[in-house]
Image (cartoon, rainbow, N blue to C red; front, side, top):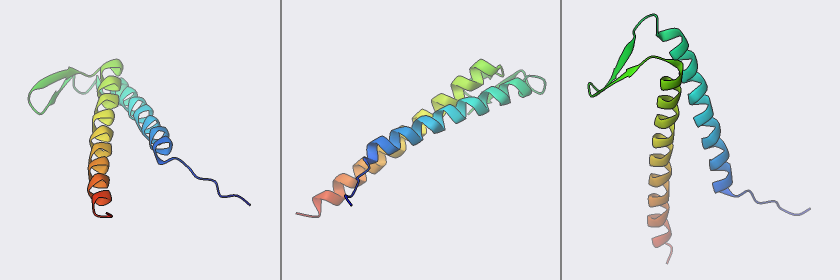
Length: 87
């Protein structure tokens, strides 16, 4: 039996894409149901976003991309320091 190796980057891309799509779906449902309660929401007091399905879908997906990119960047940075100690 041969060992099969799974590329970690490929796994991360699949999980990240799934999380971004899920964030978009949740944003769509929140936008569909939230327009009755509040016509706009404020993000950190700096940006007012209308609570439509399209805007909250894009906001959720964008926020997921930023969070995952930051996480991946930190993991990449940590792995460079870890590899430096092996020499």
